[in-house]
Image (spheres, rainbow, N blue to C red):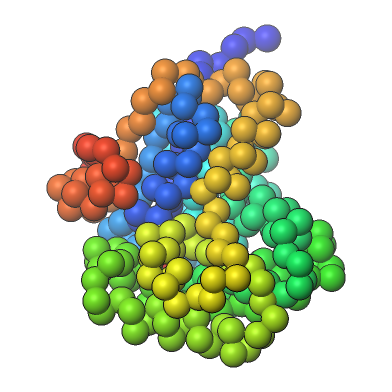
Length: 276
Ligand code: DGL
């Protein structure tokens, strides 16, 4: 059998949010090479229709495949909710039977049922993810006794993309969605940050959520689930390039991406602009 050339692990998000996942993946699996793609020029995806999110996600995944990735992580809940299944069912079997695309929702739901005591959980997400009810549907399959309240937070991604996550203006909108969620279900003991941008708002979110409520960011969960996947799929693991480096691609202006991405990654980032 002819051996395929190993490639970097692709990590895709609509913008900066996937960096919160990449950071944790690199901590857990530092030996691999990564290729990050942020579609910042077209972010946010959160209010867009299914067809558009699918088209944008397919373009990004095919770009990462063309650049040698065999495995791509959709480090974006909106893309995972609205495009992952279609990419897996319509795009991969016909065009890329040996490549794989994984999302962030299933690994999060797997963990969720193991940690809630009250069996009442909350979700903060983009309108696209919340309205797709992907979390509710996955929970019904895996943990039917857990009740989820899904809260769309349309203002949170724009705040992060604008670099205002820790600005004084963010407080109003952070508090607004928290109050609404906890009014809707006061028994919630665990809240999922179901958008990869939201960990950047965590200091403010923590400020307005009662201390006894757990807040669950996804980075560590996705990193652990990827480690487990690679262990269970040695044929894919062999195709993942080792080296420990990371390359960044963005569809927006490089300087703009680099300054904010360096802050999020806590290291210097130098990206290249591409057109999808
Ligand atoms: N980081 C994406 C997510 O996890 C973001 C969203 C957006 O572009 O609206 O849903």
